[in-house]
Length: 287
Image (cartoon, rainbow, N blue to C red; front, side, top):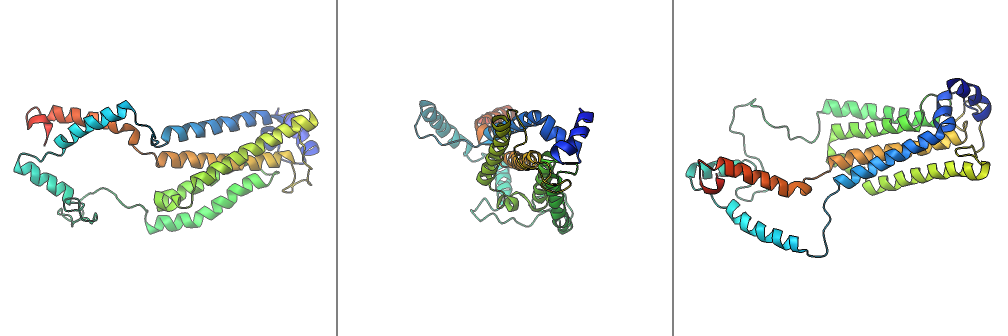
């Protein structure tokens, strides 16, 4: 395979990079299948991580669940029977302004300065943000370069991974909310479908016009130019769109995944823990 790719890359495709000839030419059908395996994986992650959809019809199980919740909620909201437990609950809620309905302004910490506490900042330090701001454009250009120049090692698949890495670096530096204003799910989904449709069109066009799947139907440019490669370059560019948008969708689908699918299971676990701890305390396991 390597020897054949070396022999046909220049005369047949006008490129000097045999790797791209193998990936998008000789074994283009394999790359075609791998692309849509990735697409299926992206769809699977999005389906699994989606939020609950509101039902327009009321089912009997919903009615029973509301009745059961109505009976459980008052018991959970029952005030603690001991002054110590009551003061502890008030202190815990008041630490973040929840006891008197204040808008979530934290109180001054009572511990000594330097006490370890949970990290709540959405952004990282100015050093990290400045470094990523300087590196991100360079990495983005490098990713596009991998896919743009057909005579250089690379291609759309690794280039898409590089661009996704740039977005992931921005998320690490600036936080989810800042990046989510730029990364729009609907736009990414449309771009991914556009890339997939372009790949299908290019491959099927070779079958229809030349009688061979993945045959070249585009004009070849001069050697070592951005237009060299014909179908290989178009396939690589479509692959760039497909991989970059797909991986980005997967990452942000996981990051935005809520816990609304597991509320009942978590409630059951809390009830079981409360009953286990309440054996020696107040009735029903209330603190």
